[in-house]
Image (cartoon, rainbow, N blue to C red; front, side, top):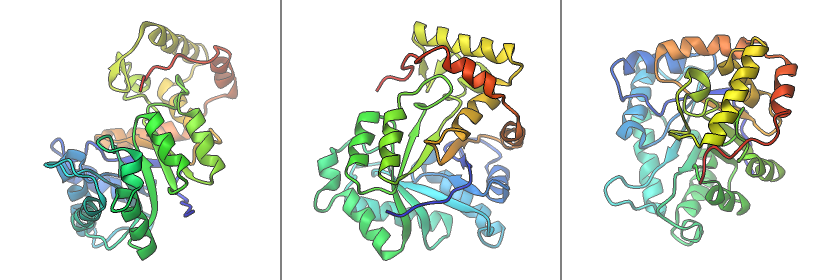
Length: 292
């Protein structure tokens, strides 16, 4: 088992390259004091990795405190996601980023194949293991949304890292059994999207990019009321829920602009009292929120 020692907050670059200002944002991401950036082969059709690679080249190399994590994706034209595709995906990622190796490369959203296919001869997972053994990648991870599928991959014992998003937050705990199982195996746990796709940061009416069921929306409002009662910024509370959890090794926060990056520092530095979290826990087990 390869272990990672990431910074507590990792900067998510899934939207990088989708809008003007990508160069400025990419420069800010790789120079941030937080030091770690998470991207993927298919984010913005490859433009996320390309923008980060361009920033690395403008900087004359990756800053010493910075690490870039990426992910293998299925072929965008054929949907293939076998071992050969994983190797091509990594070649594409390294070429765009201008790097010779990555500390972490993750199997990303493998919805089009079964776990048995991914694990079998010529499959995606043996290819990742081979690349890890060669030293081209330092650790391998599984990064996906559907909890039942991710749990199957975790239970194989083949992976070093697990990443789940929108399922372990201030207002939902559905990924808790997954994270407990991963920790028991000695895996590194990355918890992404602590704001639930924006709901806990800007009051958006969806959660995890989906409409909220009525019972879950009511629970979110109760938590929001508790934040007001305790004088707590809800976004800071959402972030610190993940940062303080013993099940989470690092929290991935999506950054869509330099303004969002600038706003992240005060959220990290905010003081959220234990009394607020105790009040949230007193509400009981939250409704699922995001159904698989």
